[in-house]
Image 1 (cartoon, helix red, strand yellow):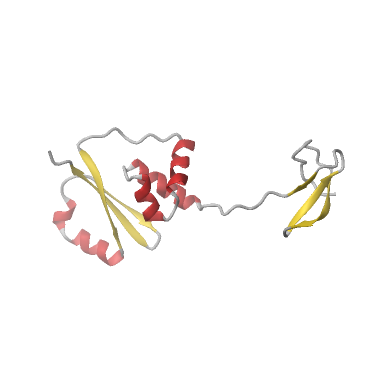
Image 2: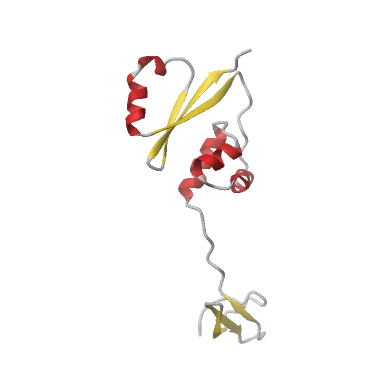
Amino acid sequence: MISLKCPKCSSSEAVKNGVIKNRQRFRCKKCEYNFTVDKVGKGISTYYVIKALQLYIEGVSFREIERLLGVSHVSVMNWVKKYQLKIPEKNSYHPTYKILNHKELMEFYADRENLTGAGMIVTELGDKFMLIKWERFKS
């Protein structure tokens, strides 16, 4: 006997009952209900979830996050809703970003002029780096 719970009656008395579309089928001994195990989803790495949420908090739009990470903007919206994140209130700054490799990042830091002005954050993005800099809105 296998210790699976029947989705219909929650009984743990299930036995194997064949294979359907390469998935094991089970039958509940109590209610005679046939069911298969849950399909293993594609699943997105928590790394991408965290990066997407960080970018959202920094003011990057859903579509830009989609283009940067290759994750659906709808997924990002669902994560924002799930974790109840609120974007910071708008102020006179807006984020701009650049994608740089290691060499380009070092060259960016070598120029002292790039290090003055508004805030800046660097985050790893796979084998590249994303540099987010806040600039004042021009009025």
